[in-house]
Length: 226
Image (cartoon, rainbow, N blue to C red; front, side):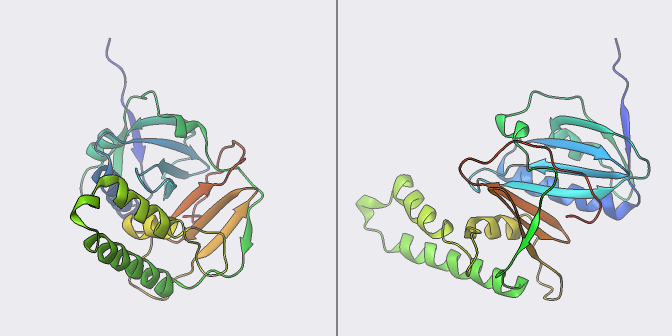
């Protein structure tokens, strides 16, 4: 029996192109990546979890219709369905998602937190951290240049918090690696909190992570939330 293909109609070609770029970056870190898709009210939110960053990455897109669905699919299949220079795609067949797909940020209760530096300072902090990691890695004696030793250095560097906030530097690193922190200096960034969840929001996407004891929930789909 042939399974009918469900179409995905975006508001314009740029929405599809931006989503394709996001999926490509996710697949760079995990060729077998799955994403959870939630649609409603004319918007689509796509959640991914790039390995090693220990965060959730969220990209939103405007849809041409008010479809409603919530499913987990292959990131690679979704990317393949997005044609270049078009505003359409196809929704792949659902897959059994990894455990993280059942643990999404809460629907509401987000409050903006003070103390987050601007985008230029955030990018500078990531650049300095990468340089420090390389310097400390190169300084390791040959008998200690192991994956475990490098992981210890990385964990110490990327677990540092940003300025006076609770946001770990790895969340900023993830945002830059996924294209959410761009070279242009004049765009708004915000740090939000809901319970034990933190969310770094930019116009190009969001990074969310949960501290110990965080609850389960579903993120509301809203255009412009990033």
